[in-house]
Amino acid sequence: MLEEKPYDAAVFVGRFRPFHVAHKRVADEALRLGKRVIILVGSSNAPRGDRNPFLFEEVRDMIWGVYGPEIASGRLILDKLPDEPDDDLWVLKVKQTVLRHMPGNSDHVTLHGCNDFKIALMGWKKDSDSYWLDLFPQWTFTPVPPIVSVNATDIRKSLFQEGTVSMNLLPPEIVLWLARWCTMNDVKVTFIGEGHVHNPQR
Image 1 (cartoon, rainbow, N blue to C red):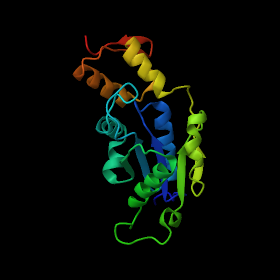
Image 2 (cartoon, rainbow, N blue to C red):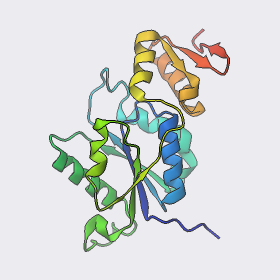
Image 3 (cartoon, rainbow, N blue to C red):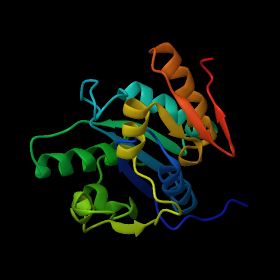
Image 4 (cartoon, rainbow, N blue to C red):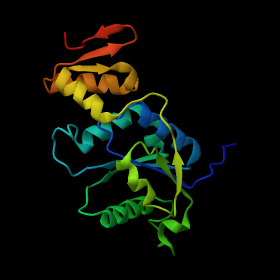
């Protein structure tokens, strides 16, 4: 008998550049709570740059490497979330995208949009930039505190400025993906962790 989930959907919004262990912790909790999990990759329309070194398609491939079976079965859905000029438009886009992936919505129009469903908003209010988690009062905010201190900004800085990445900050599948990406893009990197140093490019 399948375990009953308390939410029709668990929504997880982030930029995931890269997808690290704290992201995985949130996604795992989302899978525990939601009948389906909808991961929205922010800044999906942004060009490659210092803050967005990985394009949407690359972030999608990262997450697919971790959750391939869940994505293939339809339990976990990945979609784009482009940047918008103001919060109101961005919130509307989030709601529209979530609603599009709710069960039966391709067959009929719901009376009250996302309000017809019980939705959990997953995340963690780590700093003032997390204010957007308060922009969805009709959803249930479900905080998932990280076990280790990690943020993607520091990982990017370490990778592109110092040429090192701590393996304990990334799921193993992401370490392998990142090693391949660095090789293909001629980015020199040394992976440090588990008591040893590994450089797959040697």
